[in-house]
Amino acid sequence: MSTVNPPRGPIPFAVPPLENGDRLTRDEFERRYRAMPNLKKAELIEGVVYMPATVRYSNHGRPHSYLTHWIGDYVEETPGVDCGNDTSARLDLDNMPQPDAMLLILPECGGNCQISEDDYIENAPELVAEVSSSTVSFDLNTKKDVYRRCGVREYIVWRVLDREIDWFILENNQFVPLKTDAQGIYKSHVFPGLWLDAAALVAGSLKKVTQALKNGIDSHEHTAFVKKLNYQAQE
Image 1 (cartoon, rainbow, N blue to C red):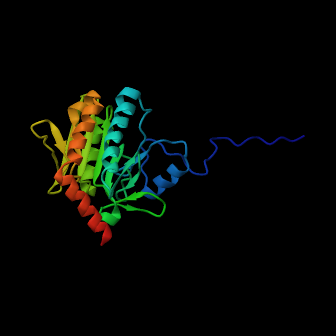
Image 2: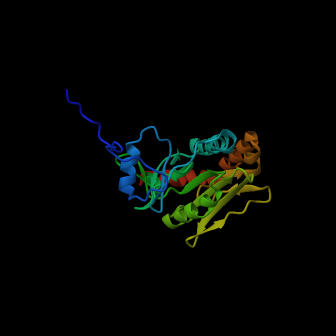
Image 3: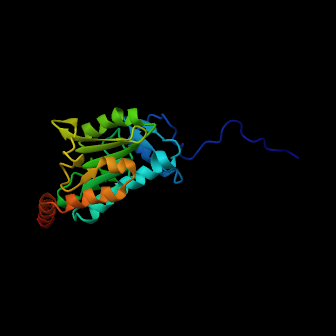
């Protein structure tokens, strides 16, 4: 009775899996990502695949939740804007990051982004935020330069281990630090009324964070911004 010997060597995949450090085109990155439905996060930055390690509670999960809660509250009070959480964005042919949070003006209200037929963000959202512990150097250098070059107008990095929040705004094609007011409140230039008590957010004092945001939403600038968005949507 004859037997069939199994083939030697690794069994080929129908679609090769993503591996950290792979150099791929964006199309190939997307093809491999789609073939791995259980993969939670992968990014293509300057043509290189980055796959972060497992997420910890205090260093990422909790601050990420606080950050998205703050952004979500702003969206609820600001018709014409929307947000995303861990959403891939096609910035250019070499970059498809998956930022921790983003805030965008809807296309019909004059925003920069478009939503593709296959439900991806295309072009740069107006604001991107990253929660950073082990990736601080990467987020403040390589990724920051990508966001700048692709036209992200505001960039927030929460340096969890340093207990600091950096907020950058795009001026003359460069990211420059946004300064707080006398009360230590950050006030967005692109999204009027998006105010942040950074010290309170770092300390986990969500009531203070909510109050600062409420003050921003109650401002004349926010009212004028909502009217502007509504006007653009009706044109």
